[in-house]
Amino acid sequence: MAEILDGKKLRDKIFEDLKIKIDKMSVKPTLAVILAGDNPASAIYVRNKKKTAEKLGINSIIIEYPSNISEDVIIKKIEELNSDKDITAILVQLPLPVHVDKFKVIETILPEKDVDGLTSYNSGKLFLGEKPYVYPCTPKGILLLLDEYNIEIEGKHVVVLGRSNLVGKPVAQMLLNRNATVTMCHSHTKNLDNIIKTADILISAVGKKIVGEKNIIKSNCVIVDVGIFKDESGKVRGDVEFDEVFESASYISPVPGGVGPMTIASLMLNTVELSEGSRKLGR
Ligand code: GUN
Image (cartoon, rainbow, N blue to C red; front, side, top):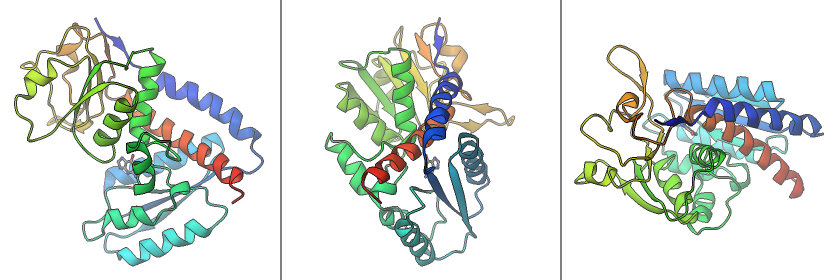
């Protein structure tokens, strides 16, 4: 029977420590979030980020644009935020409207203010096995959760489902840097079931049901479910059929309440880390 990887509990513990740290800071961190377009999920995520930041004593501003905003306006705003000493962290909420080049926009963020760790500088550092200013939020949260439960990573076979820049690629690289053997799977992977069966740790970040009855996981597999979507009845679900794997897995992160709270905890940790760094750099 699996033990639950409780993201809410760990998030609350992180926030308790973080609040004490922020209270002692003479200059509070300031997070700027750019929200462009009318994606309803993004609007909820951004509101939650602001609310959480405020609870912890982090300043935050949201810059909202309609979906027909030009790329140039967003880029100019980021340049302005880059040179504003009071802004210590910048986040561009994804997805951006389709006509906007997200790579160009993200690349405009100064690496030392890039709270998502998505610029080529920060992701390059990660892929070289060096230290970026910060690690991407969801992957960082996943590793914090695994470490909290003392789950061994070194030498383990980790199967990552999904190859996004936000989750799949960076989490695979972070685990590789921790000496795991990593297999990345995606929509073109053949014999997926056979690969899943070999996983000591399974990280699923697909956003649709992928591990169900027909997949048999290895006994004592650790399951981290990053996926989140609504099924036909409107119920929030993860990629993995929780009930199907619960008996044979050793650990499983629930949806909701697993990785989601860890992503926001990591964002707050990153915001504080960047702010501390900016003072060290004298900016
Ligand atoms: N959209 C969904 N998740 C994320 C995230 O972690 N960062 C950003 N910037 N956008 C997102």
